[in-house]
Length: 95
Image 1 (spheres, helix red, strand yellow):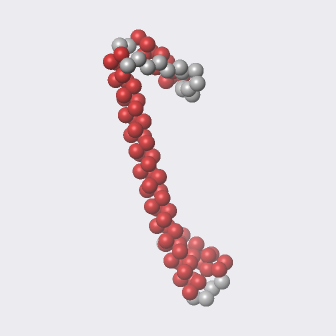
Image 2 (cartoon, rainbow, N blue to C red; image 1 turned 120 degrees about the vertical axis):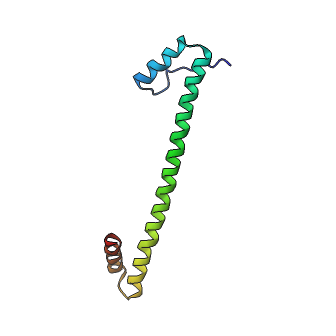
Image 3 (cartoon, rainbow, N blue to C red; image 1 turned 60 degrees about the vertical axis):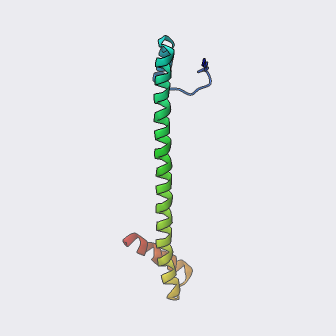
Protein backbone atom coordinates (compact mmCIF):
# COMPACT_ATOMS: atom_id res chain seq x y z
CA UNK A 1 0.00 0.00 0.00
CA UNK A 2 1.39 3.36 -0.99
CA UNK A 3 0.09 6.19 1.18
CA UNK A 4 0.99 9.80 0.50
CA UNK A 5 0.13 12.48 3.03
CA UNK A 6 0.73 16.19 2.65
CA UNK A 7 2.00 17.82 5.82
CA UNK A 8 1.02 21.30 4.61
CA UNK A 9 -2.36 21.31 6.35
CA UNK A 10 -1.26 19.51 9.52
CA UNK A 11 -0.47 21.36 12.73
CA UNK A 12 2.77 19.62 13.68
CA UNK A 13 5.53 20.69 15.99
CA UNK A 14 8.90 21.26 14.33
CA UNK A 15 10.26 18.19 16.10
CA UNK A 16 7.46 15.97 14.79
CA UNK A 17 7.78 17.43 11.30
CA UNK A 18 11.52 16.67 11.25
CA UNK A 19 10.83 13.12 12.38
CA UNK A 20 8.21 12.55 9.69
CA UNK A 21 10.44 14.04 7.00
CA UNK A 22 13.22 11.68 8.11
CA UNK A 23 10.90 8.76 7.29
CA UNK A 24 11.50 9.38 3.61
CA UNK A 25 14.85 7.63 3.98
CA UNK A 26 13.38 4.59 5.75
CA UNK A 27 12.16 1.40 4.18
CA UNK A 28 8.42 0.89 3.96
CA UNK A 29 8.49 -1.66 6.78
CA UNK A 30 10.40 0.66 9.12
CA UNK A 31 8.05 3.57 8.32
CA UNK A 32 5.02 1.36 8.99
CA UNK A 33 6.51 0.26 12.31
CA UNK A 34 7.04 3.85 13.43
CA UNK A 35 3.57 4.85 12.27
CA UNK A 36 2.09 1.93 14.19
CA UNK A 37 3.87 3.13 17.34
CA UNK A 38 2.26 6.54 16.93
CA UNK A 39 -1.18 4.99 16.48
CA UNK A 40 -0.66 2.77 19.52
CA UNK A 41 0.32 5.78 21.63
CA UNK A 42 -2.70 7.71 20.37
CA UNK A 43 -5.00 4.82 21.28
CA UNK A 44 -3.52 4.59 24.78
CA UNK A 45 -4.02 8.35 25.21
CA UNK A 46 -7.64 8.11 24.07
CA UNK A 47 -8.36 5.26 26.48
CA UNK A 48 -6.72 7.21 29.32
CA UNK A 49 -8.79 10.32 28.56
CA UNK A 50 -12.00 8.29 28.30
CA UNK A 51 -11.40 6.65 31.69
CA UNK A 52 -10.55 10.04 33.14
CA UNK A 53 -13.85 11.51 31.87
CA UNK A 54 -15.82 8.53 33.21
CA UNK A 55 -14.16 8.80 36.63
CA UNK A 56 -14.81 12.55 36.76
CA UNK A 57 -18.46 12.10 35.82
CA UNK A 58 -18.94 9.40 38.47
CA UNK A 59 -17.30 11.63 41.08
CA UNK A 60 -19.53 14.57 40.13
CA UNK A 61 -22.62 12.39 40.44
CA UNK A 62 -21.53 11.19 43.89
CA UNK A 63 -20.83 14.75 45.02
CA UNK A 64 -24.19 15.92 43.68
CA UNK A 65 -26.01 13.17 45.57
CA UNK A 66 -24.14 14.03 48.76
CA UNK A 67 -24.90 17.75 48.42
CA UNK A 68 -28.55 16.98 47.64
CA UNK A 69 -28.85 14.91 50.82
CA UNK A 70 -27.59 17.87 52.87
CA UNK A 71 -29.91 20.24 51.04
CA UNK A 72 -32.95 18.01 51.57
CA UNK A 73 -32.07 17.65 55.26
CA UNK A 74 -32.08 21.42 55.75
CA UNK A 75 -35.21 21.91 53.66
CA UNK A 76 -37.04 19.27 55.71
CA UNK A 77 -36.11 21.23 58.83
CA UNK A 78 -38.20 24.11 57.45
CA UNK A 79 -35.41 26.42 56.35
CA UNK A 80 -35.78 28.69 53.35
CA UNK A 81 -34.14 27.60 50.11
CA UNK A 82 -31.31 30.14 50.18
CA UNK A 83 -30.47 29.34 53.81
CA UNK A 84 -30.71 25.59 53.13
CA UNK A 85 -28.33 25.92 50.16
CA UNK A 86 -25.82 27.85 52.26
CA UNK A 87 -25.95 25.32 55.10
CA UNK A 88 -25.77 22.39 52.66
CA UNK A 89 -22.67 23.95 51.09
CA UNK A 90 -21.06 24.34 54.52
CA UNK A 91 -21.93 20.74 55.42
CA UNK A 92 -20.52 19.53 52.13
CA UNK A 93 -17.26 21.44 52.64
CA UNK A 94 -16.75 20.28 56.22
CA UNK A 95 -17.27 16.57 55.51
